[in-house]
Length: 327
Image (cartoon, rainbow, N blue to C red; front, side, top):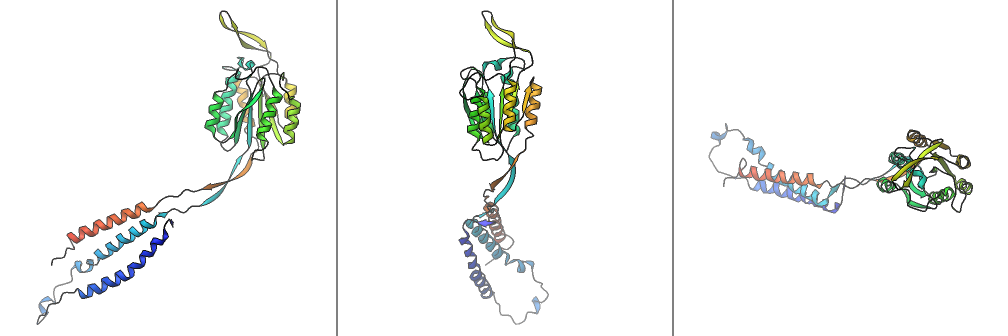
């Protein structure tokens, strides 16, 4: 325990002259009566009040002492503690081209990817995680953060058609690299999820992979889509009609990106497989970080104030009843 104003504790020195004054006063205040003989009083024992008569003074000292401590403001000590935790820097890079509307996943590819990614993010409590989206172009939707609420809220708002259509895998990966390369953790990982082939952008997937390798960033690529054909929504005069469309994923390019950066390529053909993919990525090696934690102050004067009040009430009660002086 420490005190916010320890100088008030010097007031306890006043107890010394106060106690001396009380003793001297008590000796002088003894009543005297001259009698010829004390024989008549010899059999009268001492009353318990004789021993309790000093209790009032003790209670007064207790009250004053507690008030002095209250003035000094006792507090719990403030300690800095170091705690080891584990975490990595992660950028989730999500393809939001309109092909992600295909319904070979429930309810469709984009919503299935968002749901599984949200579960993954919620379980990584000690990681810095960011979100990059891409289609015909790419941009950072959420920089790396440990605020899961903000990140998950932004992920929920993601939908196809937010940006120009087509698929710029290289640009999406390059944007993710630029965001993560200066992160604080030693281990840096990009999870790139797409359902197509690179057909837009200024940077090729191979070049972006080499840049990631230069910065020691591992890239895990996920090809999303069933094998063969998948139902895709088409607008007709009679409403939305789902027609089978051939699934084309450039697996060779995604495999090359993973191999170049020391990551791994996964093919997710349905939502359950996609969950397994994120579960495996969740088992990545974590980097130990040292986090400095501060224990907040806690005021402890309340209990001392209560003791002072009870002591004062006890003194008043005894002075007016059991230990009352009769002049």
